[in-house]
Length: 186
Length: 216
Length: 182
Image (cartoon, rainbow over all chains, first blue to last red; front, side, top):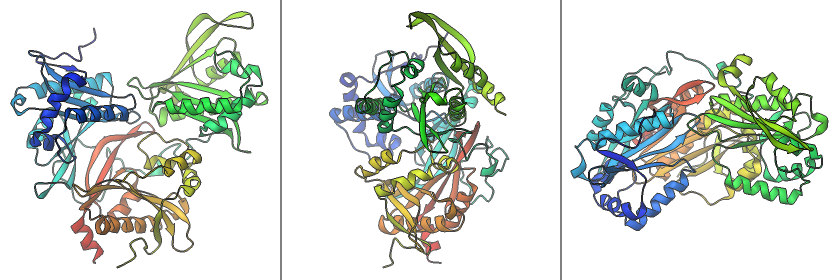
């Protein structure tokens, strides 16, 4: 019997729906904290129109390997975040994970942890990747704790790679190997 | 594998760079130099323009395309063939790897080969190979080029297995594939009709370990 | 002002589509190509490469050819990628395609030139690079230029049945200035 990949306890993975989701995504980008925790590029609010365009570009750049999930609560079917596996190097078995819970009110409720568990299973049991990479910033202690909790290791510290709020911060590169995840989850 | 210690504190100017306690030089790696060079052939870049001319030349012998694919064999016009290959190149997915086969002594283009659908979670791909010049059949050119494609599949694309499909009426190719190590895995019975008879589609595959064992 | 593009052994030149044939010929050496590439290496079609080089420039990429001062021979390339002025960071890539010019200081000279360009013309704060851990000669050269080891991503390069680490190195403006003013 194959495991359910898209249904969790409190959340489920869904496809991006431009009509339903662009507005709430746009709202998140008006919170500079959200962007600065998840985005390397300069924070900028985006109208729903541009959210849709950005999504279409991302899909085009993926050349058929587009693994983007909207996180929706099961209780009230709200879109609360996203998880995205991108830049897949099939020959090396490596890819990058990007994820975020959009609203401060939705954090600290276990949605992120459930998302992480589900996306790791997808990466290692459906895409059969060898490893995943994720980047965060020195000032994002929450993300660092979160990644470490889920078995990631900090592999690279790119010194003074990010400039925000008048000073330089280190960029941190984390990695998790399929065999580590499998050892902990089987 | 690197040691499992967490690297939260960065190291300054490490003198020794090693992986899994193993230090080695580029010369230790097998085949590094000659990924695309075999004993009799060389794999070179696929060129839609050249392919158009070659398709026109090779299609004059109706048997070549009958052996290569299941479309009705036709003489091809170079210019239209070129257009077709250009369009196909636009649609090529990231995991498609077409090549032309060259005879190194006179740089003549003698065939084409490809690995298709190589980027997937299933780590396998389809291989195809064809030598266009009849007088070169049965002399090992096809096998040499196919071995290069397999080496590329297993050592550069890191695949787990390679699939191929061929036709019951191509016994010379089937023998060559068997010699290289492909295993018969199934037949789709009487699915082809040519020359007034019905023929099976023959499916074969080779696993990474099988190829490695045959190529120590 | 010093001539930004001239070093002691080489000079940096514009990357010219005319050079496509030479650059494609270097890719025939798959040892070289596999140390440079993330994607699977393939033989380069000079015509296709030339067309790619003729396309309009991506503004976040600065591509240079490397020519010897002695006889103006094109021996390699160096490139600044993903130049990000918000954060003042860029990745550098370099390759001495002509095997006769490896291990003799030409690459180091080209790297020093591009670092000077990055810090003095682009006003960057740091330059980063990635290299496969087995590329010992290149890594030694980068250390000589002042790059500092910042960690390794585990098993990121899978070739010939082996998962090798990818080494990340970086040099900060202050570090480079100290070295340059020695």
